[in-house]
Each structure stands twice: as structure tokens, then as C-alpha cells.
Length: 299
Image 1: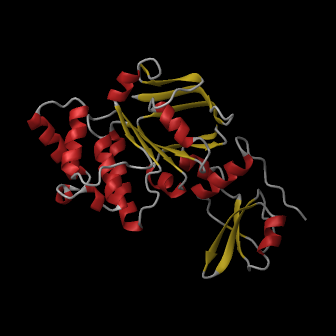
Image 2 (image 1 turned 90 degrees about the horizontal axis):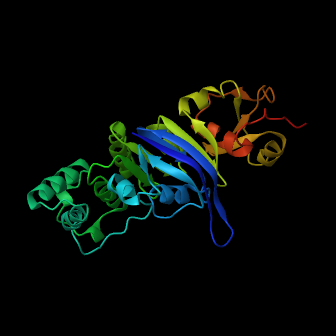
Image 3 (image 1 turned 90 degrees about the vertical axis):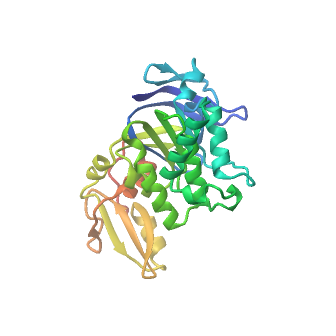
């Protein structure tokens, strides 16, 4: 199964062009769509999920034309939006049973088997009789995945999967997501680089409604070998370094800023080489676009 997005564009009535000729080929497995808030990720996911129509372009899941046969696409779709809407005074088991009915599982015994299996898979069996209003954010996300998995979908879309989760719930949720990509196309739309790094074998970066990178995370990281440098600076000298060098990111380590710089050559003998990571790929591509030029060193 493969998802093909071809030259999709979308402009909203207020004049905002959210998508600009977006084309992607997404195979089975975990695929990360990475970009900042407002980059067009949610617009693209809603379009693929047939919740809105593009101005131009096409979307195919295998031999299904999603724009011409929305019903066929939706039968094979599992969608977890960023905000999981639930009825606070309804139990997980009751609501999951209701959604299974809507998915066309008419047999009561079959629904029971499906609900039991899904609650077990998302580790909510012990909370099946608890009202959803008492669920934590992570539990609600896991319940949302259970809803998305009804009917064994071949396309699963998860929008901002770990936003707002505490570290323990994030680990549980990532472990669950990692199990889903064996037989389906699973798209993670996120601004969190770590989610893509930990889960996805293929990815794309979107900026301003355009795809500026598509490929394998490991290959993109390898392409930056020998081009990433780091230096510990002081807060007072940080602005000067940012003005002089192509600073990709700054992190506090033991209270002191550590900067990472992109340059083909050692920017200054005070810098040491650093192993590139996916954050470096992301910041380099976001800064330079599709074809990053070697970073110039001012001075």
C-alpha cells in the first residue's frame, strides 16, 4: 500500500496559501511530516483525510482516488487529530463500542471482541469503565488511537502525537505508535523533531506550505557529517556569535549556552566538531530550503 500526493495546493478564502504544489510518495511504515506550527501540516493532513478539498492536485491510496471516492478512502482511514474530542461523562468502553457501530461492525459479539482487543492494545483495559473526563492527556491520546484503529485501517494519520504529554506518557504513546507501521501507511504530523527521529524511517520537512526535504532521516544526517560544530559560550557573547556564525541552535548545558554551527570548514579554532543529528538537519533545511548552500562565515 502506498499513498501518493501529487501537486496539491490550497488557498483559503482570506488569501492564505496553505499548500503550494505539494507532492509526496509515502510507502507503508512510519512517515514523519515535520514542520513548525503554521507550515501547512494540518491542512495537508485534513486534505488527505478528505475533511477538506484542495484547489488543485490529487491524492491516491493504492488504487483509490481519495478526492473522487471519499467513502472508499474513509473506510480505510484511521485519523487522530491534535485535539481528541470526547464525551466526559461516557466510559471508554461505551464510546468505543459506539464508534465500532458507526464503522459498520453490527454484530454485538464481534464489537465486544474488537473493543476488548483495542483497549488491551492501548493499555486501557483497567480504565474501560472510567469516564473519559477523568482520563489524563496521555490516556485520551491512547483512546484516540483505539478509535483510529477500528476496522484495521490501511492509512493512519496522527496529528501532533505527543504535544502536551508528560515524559512517561510520551514514551508509552511512542511505543504504541511504533507498533502500527507494520502493515499500514502511518503519518506522524509534528513539530517535535524527537518524535520523527525515534519512530520514522522516512520523512519530509514542510515550510510555508512547500516540501523542502523528502528522504531518509539517517541519510540526511549523514549528509551533514563534518559540517556541524559546537562551542560553549557565555550569555554575554552569545549575540556576537549569532551575528558572526551560522548558528543553528542554542541549548543551555549546566547553565551555559552551547551553540551548534553549520559550516563546511571549522568556523574558528575555538569550535570543536559535533556529530550531526536530526535537529541539525531540520534547522539547516529550514534556514536554507531545498538546496542549502555552504554556510558563509562573516568576519
